[in-house]
Length: 476
Image (cartoon, rainbow, N blue to C red; front, side, top):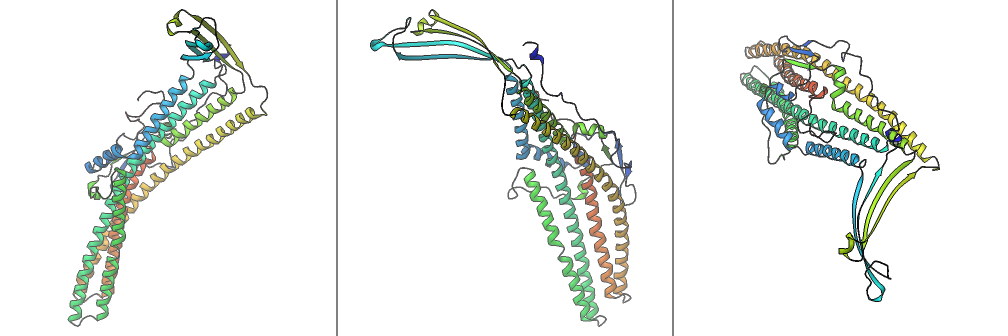
């Protein structure tokens, strides 16, 4: 039996093979941008994401906001408490493998006379018992060990979920701050455009008064002004949504707290971007780590189901002192017992075999989920890398379009005032300038956003927070 106690039913867990790829796309970029209107960003292949990656944007206001969110977010607090709960369950599972010792004390009064007990009137007697009892599950086929292994895997899963909650919180805070800054920059652009519309309207009215333009030109200019004013409410709504989202992320209400009025000038575009190797990413990305932990838990479940098909042995021992009075417990009747209970399943209608088969199928499903998680993470990284390349090219094109449209608008305004250009030409120049100004603000914000998305897609820092509860019950 002691030899059997070293056996563990079920397969040993084998971690899936590391990916052989060393890049995420057919050709990972070494640099993006570095032309007029599009600053260059160097891609550092093989570098890990820093622990406080949002500091790469060099914004003290953003740093303070992220720190506040990490302190006050109920979502992160809930995830951390759940991780701590899972660690406690590991200790509980380990405790079941140790001897279970209890102490029993009882006092009773019963009718009838028994030798050695104090008899009272009416053949009633007092009975006092006191003594310890111990039991031990020999765990012949490793069912308890597999349960401990399963609890450890589930604790690792909850830790990964806690890290994922931190990553989601910090990532969303950065993205919402950039989104607010982008909306405010577009609002400023629209207001400038409205100012141009108003000056155009004044020019048209002066020209109409002088008899050089028709009243239709005034109506056309007023229509342009009204149309551009209509661009403001949607952008203001975007800014409001971003403010409210930041309040929620910071653990505050929108009625009592407002985030900083971010502008894109408050951020610095990171000049160097990390690009973790695929073989290392699968070891620390929260989504993949969570899938790996679930796979280990499923593997342990196969062992648990297998162990239930074999005999179980429970060893027990007890010692009891019995007497008719409390003072007589230490000099009365002493009873002791040692037992070994062996229980083996004989017939259960195929239930245990079916449970094992179900556990094997669950493992196969979880293995497929793990592979899917790896593919999805790698796909997100590839998407962001391509987006950064396209953002730089688009930003350069928008910058050139903005410079050209602004110069054309100034010339057209001068020509219209001198009577050498029509109102339609002026409005067309203004429309092109409007599109270029808004497009440049939008693409500029998108580049900041996609830069943050790269840090998020890479899973944040591979280092666990110092406050993270560990699966072995110790703080890491």
